[in-house]
Length: 83
Length: 244
Image (tube, rainbow over all chains, first blue to last red; front, side, top):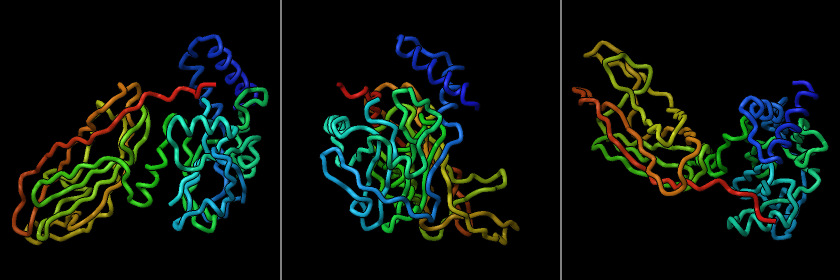
């Protein structure tokens, strides 16, 4: 999908939603396709993931190492808790 | 097995969400999406002038204790994503949902869901633990028409898609029949997923289904059996955005 088509899909859907209109199915499908174009999934199986330290919802800092349980960790990347 | 979530939300957004939904696992704040970028999963399709620029391609990694990726799951259709507990069910056989034991005499099956509650359109994990009494066996696939394979099928009032993976059956030669048939004996497990219908009414539901099989011993086959079951499942209404 080319950049312009993708950008249009995003702008159109957001404009409609802000105006309280529902995007038609064709536009919605284009919007979903635009979001998923050239999907990247990050580190490969067998690779080590990058290290990091981030605060949680209680203000506590966690490093990747500190999050690990005995059997490892399920790490879930979500879009937002806000929408 | 620990669980943690990462998003680009601020700590205060995460704190409100966590309070509202009683989340006990860490929800990590990657404001500015530095870690999302470091993982190489920033969604670069989003125009930079759009409010949600900075989101990742959503997905999950199952990591070994040394930080190595054991498995990962990224689905293209963002409306169909398994819960974290569904991944736990598949990898570790830990069912956090309700289960029902279907007792059909020599054939018993415990059918478990990954979650007690779900949203419309959500994907749930399913695990079926079979226990076949000694001396008896049931059938796998592929199978000649006159025999009944072992299946668990969920009703389509709640379920729009389902897939259940059975282990490889054992080929057994039946001298009297002059055939070799795929057979299951003793204890075995089938694991899979169901996709819930969209727009289900919130509240308590019964996830209904049918266990179908034919049991035989060395001398005879019983008539194929179909046993109905129901598993309690709560459907939640879709989560509105946290109040500002």
